[in-house]
Length: 403
Ligand code: KIV
Ligand code: ZN
Image 1 (cartoon, rainbow, N blue to C red):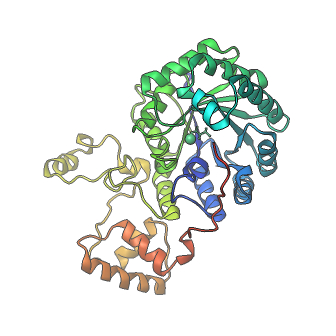
Image 2 (image 1 turned 30 degrees about the vertical axis):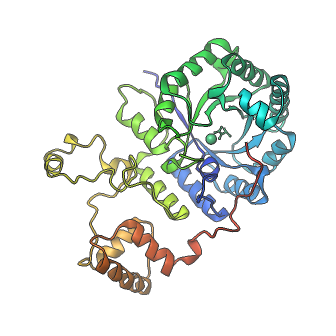
Image 3 (image 1 turned 45 degrees about the vertical axis):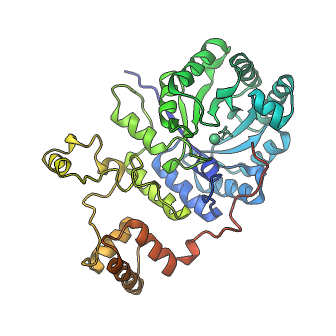
């Protein structure tokens, strides 16, 4: 049987980085991008080249360092943005430009102050211009889910006629619901000429907690690319979480019979690396990667899981790379256990560093019942790796006038 492929477009380094507290230095972006490559994502959106020198440098550095995934830069529908993206992506093995232009009346009237006709001309001109530099041009009608459906079709038709190869349908403000979002994709497939030769893409924000559900509804309605971020970070309530989309495709093969390139056991290492870089972890109850995602507290549940994990687990922790047999660290734990856990968290310490970490660990363990990963990361960053703590200033991102 021929199984269709779902492409994962990761925007942790762009939409994710745009969220408060998630700025990353260039070297951190490169490190994260290499982990994303290892994870098996198809496209890495590395930044918004025109927005600042830092972003342009990050896109360039990621493009040089990563050879296994396609590297994308965001751009407004402006020629200067497009040439900036082309410059930053010059050394990519495979590149894509991602052009966005608002299509909803509220954005056109109040933000861009242009008419629908002007927006169509701008989309046409930008995509045609981009095709001079790129074979792969993604076009996003921003705020698509609040755009008048007839006009959305016209805008997408314009982009397809101008040479777009991927059409993304952003739920910019996290407003849509699964059935409605799916019907947008069906509408585009029915009404836009030539749509069968482009890849349709879902891009969902989580303002109503439906980003993943909406993305999966889009897949069922014909989307073959999903845009997402590690740990679901992103503007406001975040973007669709990559780990949740990938896990759903894995666990519910019966309802979602699609292939994809994500190596599931690289999910937890990617999540941990991101938490370490941005210095905060997902909520403990966050699906798949939260610290409680595989914890069983209730006696009945513990008994059931010990008898047969399938009683209460639809996915084993090991499948998504969560280290098995996680020891609870407390004041009775020794150096060996501490070294082991820090190793799992990605820190390999010298003997003398371990001594320093252990003294601080004992102090924390005296005060608290259990010592959590966050405490351990805090000890390492504060006392051993202060250079890895991002400061509020001088990050790789700048202050581009955004969407
Ligand atoms: O949410 C959004 O509309 C975006 C676009 C730039 C695609 O992030
Ligand atoms: Zn977005």
